[in-house]
Image (cartoon, rainbow, N blue to C red; front, side, top):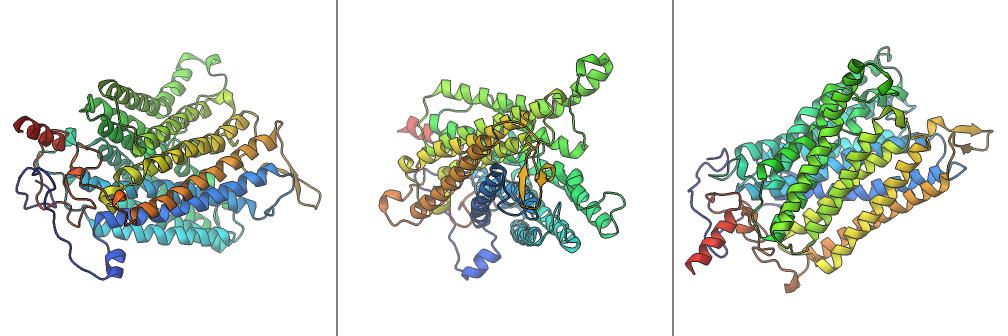
Length: 556
């Protein structure tokens, strides 16, 4: 039984198109502002965060262009706020909400649940998060935020970021409770679909990790409000809250990207997924990036490590392998299980699979880059290497989520996106991420600084120079092109999605099971109605819909 579906009948899913719960009419404003339908809540998160992605890509364009020029384009007093806005928005206005939004929209359908656990909590989380994001933008624009010069706006930024974190915590808590308590009868944790399990890992890690960031924000707010005797001025804020905006903590928000890829792969092959327990272990190991936030321990390898004593070396190596190495092992495990699925069956190439795999590959590159970043002899601290690493993780997860939207769009909007039109966007996004990130990984080894605070100002004409050697314009122009291409990718995807999902063309109308799926979301109508299922289905394996199809084939 479940906490939501307390009147489950235990009936199996009937063949063909099953009956579904009917929807009740309600005012449009109430339906969205006070939404309790998880599909609406998820779509609100997705819509706002994809719009924010465009804004973040534009900021990325401005930041890279600023670095490429010998004279400040934005003004030396504005540039620090641009850097802060870019760092904050990429993670908490884009990455976290878009991943949670897709999970909130899809996971209850996969679990055979009629509802999200605590749906009003999730809705409150959305509006709290959105309000906080708006306040963050206002305060940073008014010379607040880290490196800000207006004391009241710096305090306002810290309050706004606290509101953002509280909203995301509410949404993540609702999602975690859904996976843990609202599964269909017979669906134990070993039978949960890969995407839902990956979403659970992210939700639990978020619930564990974000309170650490929340406490750091509160401490900084109190200290800054009363003189900054403990933590210092606004220019030192990143020293105390920066762990929440960088690696390895952000790894936990990218775990569902691997779930999207594996779920789409299993559907594409039409075969049962082997080694599910090992796969779930892989998801969990990637999620161990949360330890970087919880422990507040850098887990670096000090310089000249092998000149130290054995005990000193082990004091560095063991935490490094635990915090920086295990997520890499987890990703390798996921890829290995995916490779076994490819061997078992030849997949039908679809948008969900292509976007998911390309996004996961970029995230994996980010995991490797993070391991390099924390090697002391590489001397990458304070360089743009960390930014390139963050772009790999965030943009890679966004690319995978675009694939998830194309894959599960029929259940949310009742329409499909044309593969021939959407698949080239996966390749364009892949190229965009490579251009936006890899030049900065290379520039990091040449010691290109991450922020303008280390630039030397020459005279009074606003010209600047960098304190490092290398083809500055080449690296920054390539990153500039990458952000432009990412903006084009997301904008084109949004345009194609709106056109496809609102089309009256019969060719775009989705059947109940357009991809010949295996899991419960494909056992209800497209689009799925409020209530999802008229009867809570009984689950006997990880692929309940495939069971039904095989039984029908044997009796035919």
